[in-house]
Length: 290
Image (cartoon, rainbow, N blue to C red; front, side):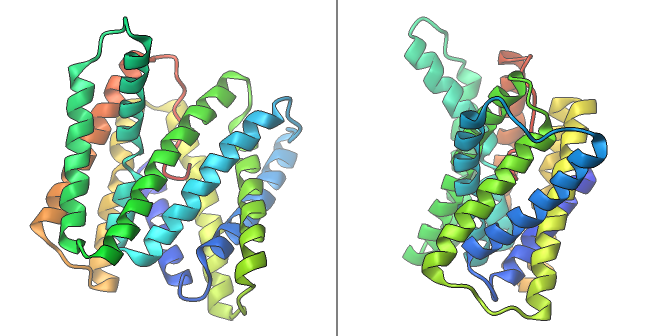
C-alpha cells in the first residue's frame, strides 16, 4: 500500500510535467491506452476473459471515473501538486456525506453525529488549503479538484456494485481504461493532437505504467489487508506529493495548507472507519484512481 501511494504520487508528478506538452484530455487518452493494453495482456496471461454480463454498469462507472480523472489531471496541471492530490482524496469524506444523505432520505434511520463531524472536518481542511490561493483563478481550479473527489466517490459506489455483481478487478479497470481512451479521443477532436517529443512520449508512458501498476498493487493490498490500515496508508500519497512539490516546483509551505491537509487526512481515515462499520461487507477499491 505504501508503494502504491508512492507510485500514484509519482504519476501525479509525471502528469504535472506532461501538462506542459499535452492537454488533460490527451493525457487521459494515453493513460487509458497504456492501461488497456497492460490489462488485456494480464487477462490473457491469467486465462481470464474481458467479456462482461453487465456492460451498462461498466459504462456508468467509466463515465463518472473518467470525468473525475479528467478533472483531477486538470487540477494537477494548475494547482500545487499536494493541493490537487489532497482535494481528490476528499472522496472518503464525500462518501460520508452520501451516507448522511441516505440516512436522511430513509427518514427512520438514525444520523450518526460522528459522520457529520467527519464531513465538517474535511471541508474545514479544504477551506484552509484553498485560503492561501484564494484569488478567483486558483479558486476555480480548486473547485474542479474538489469536484473530482466527489465524482471519485460516485465511482467507488459503482465499483462496489460491480464487485457484488462478480466482476473481477482487472475487468473493471480495463473498461475504465477504455472509457479514458474514448473520452480522451473525443476531447482531442476539438483540442487537436499535440506534437510528440521524446520527453513527452516518455512522460505519457510513465503515467500509464505507474497508474496501472499502482492500481494493481492497491487492489492487492485491499484484498489481503485491513481496510482501515490501507486507507490510512493511502494518505501517504499526500506526503509524497508535498515533498515533490516543495523540492521540484517550489510550492509554498504554509501552516494553513499543512493544517488543511492534516484535517482532510483525519477526516478521510475517520470516514473510512465509520463507512466500514456501516457496511462491513463492502469491498474496498481505490478511489484516487477512480
